[in-house]
Image (tube, rainbow, N blue to C red; front, side, top):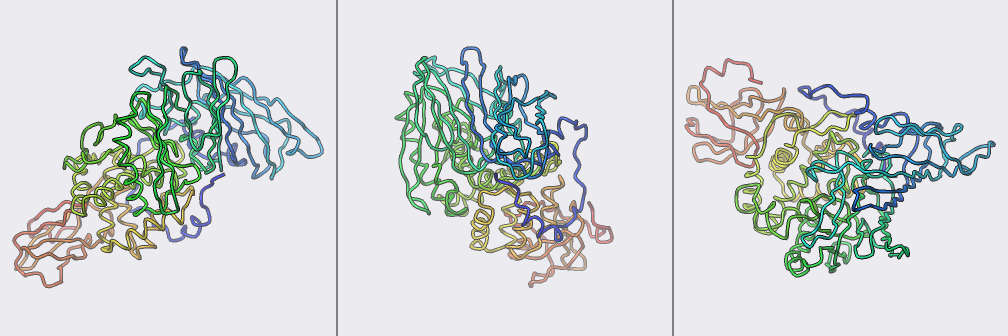
Length: 571
């Protein structure tokens, strides 16, 4: 299992600040939301050690037949367990090899009693299972799984055909959850230590999965089973099959911990364009390793698999659907031109191998940890290739996409993420923090140490916040409060009274303080600014007629009348 790093969390608990302003999220969550999004009593007593998923898709009827073996270890005694499998999939039977788990009752292989409760399957053992037991639970199921309407944003199965008319199918299920296609504990806080995936497909097609190919087997009925194994902990939603007329391409590139295999599975006929376009991949790995540290999953390798949707960070088997072009589906999300010089899907989804797959949050309320860092990786890659100014252009250009609709941090325990601002606002928050630290070497060392400290770990957003504050030596708690838990952008207000410059922050959380780079009357300075009026030092000229904030801080600037000096800070 890969459990939440409780030791580090408890060490920081006493130092964690209270939010200066409460989160404002809509209510209306249901019991089903809580069952899905929390580690409730019927999940908490058992731990997932391994998933072994066998799936036989019926490509013509958009249906599947499957068998999943969940190897569990009991952390406490229990009798009822919650397994998640989304309707309309049907459970046929559930069995457990209980001999090693039972006491003097001597239970053996048992057909377990189960009942459905929406997308939850309640499984009842014939008696109390003791703590410390390890055994497999086998779930047999079938049906027509939910079909994605707009993948990867709306999750589920995608059933389509290639341009030549051959079947092409896959799954994308982040947010919606892995239980949309196989039975599991659909909770990010508990990951298996390893997994296996067996994909049964017609002989003229190939079944591609995560990790390493362990072999294929012809079944004598016109189908072949493709057997894949993942040696590392993996998010449940990252384990997916790809089915189609694939061709294998591959190379090996130097990496920090030795040679790294780069595997590419593309549709038959796309070999030439893929070989040409994927020449940028080794450089992406090099730049990301430079900033984030060694590639986290060398045992499972790195893989791009052509997909019928835009892309997804499926660990060691990244879904690639950007049609072998640079940009984001041929566009530049920053509007600066830099985003058209590299393939967005390759850079962004590869960055998730570090943030999202290596470092995973227990609750998707903290999905900003995945997306803010992956989004900022785009700017870091631009900087790596084209220089620091280009990276700054890119991340500042992304601000036009920020909505400030709801907070970036979502509500906990109900499987609900926060605003999509977790991407662009999140990366601009990190860029601001980088400039508050004012030491690029320290900032890079922090990112690398984060991936070392939380290597293949499940964490909370609070742990990440506390780590950054501790490593930087700066209390950034109010910065995180401002950008993650409110929708307000700090406004640097300035005015002149009796020839003296005054500055403060408005539209901010209580107690916000940060150093800001400013240009006043052509003089560049970095000055501390708070939510109280103050006179900047550092030898600025007394009479100030112009003031601009350095673009690397995500704030706004406004000149106000001197009467504002008598006002309380505007919030």
